[in-house]
Length: 373
Image 1 (cartoon, rainbow, N blue to C red):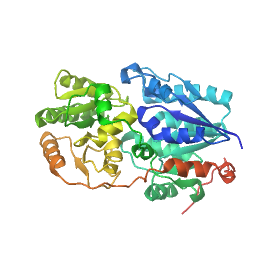
Image 2 (cartoon, rainbow, N blue to C red):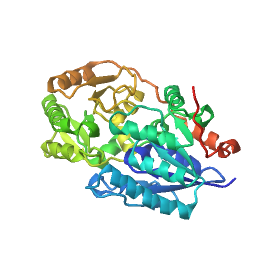
Image 3 (cartoon, helix red, strand yellow):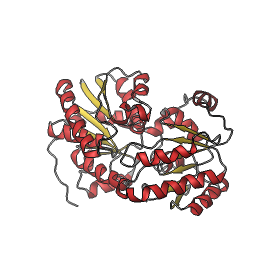
């Protein structure tokens, strides 16, 4: 069996999720991994993280610019479909693997399904909030195979009419890297990014595209609270969704303040080390409801973006109200929280490769059927 497997990555986050799976494919005889690198990876404003993909040493990498900073999500979708369609006609992959709830994932699912290529979706069946949830479920319906994080996600896919035999529960692949014994040391991470703090917390805040009108007030209240807390923070730029400029402009208030270090992006392995050793995480990133609880780290989840996505006691749900945020910061610093393993145990790559190494996996019919419950 010789199969070409195409992984599509558009952000620093989804590459971190896919990395252990790509590596496992490259290590397996008869399986060939190829990467289509696009989206935020190709934007200098967000750290040009395509360079980090290249540094990972994977053998087959194709880079494609699918946007400029002015493009709306529908235009980005169209451009990605165009570029990816041309590429798959050359590569002729046997499987396209997409992740999550970004427009690049939707483009990959559309190109695969309309060209009669198997599509596998990583981390479908979850709730995301904002426009991301609509995209995630759309990707699931355009995909033939699903690698999900837990039984709750599997149940949602069954509600969407997906067939049980097309769903594989493998956990969240980024946990594979989180449990790796070869992550860099905290001292090495601080030296690389010139972080002077002994104690610090992490801040990541993304736009809620369905509520952009509230974004200026919400991010202003949040920054006010961070300043008033007196804590040290490592701040990482938002993703490039509509509204990101509002957030970035507000973050300029923190520039030059010795209690803040601000970065467009941080390499995934280095981010995990910072996360593991932080006092707490604050913002509305999925890392606060997935990775942080896995480390037993308290996280302050602001607003609605990750609403009802996870159940860990270490997640402190808070509105973007100045006084509420300050109260939550105090609770996060002095509360006691246990490690929570809701999204797997760190062996996703093994479960993934076991599934795709079986001939029955490749016999999956490309004609989907809606499974009535």
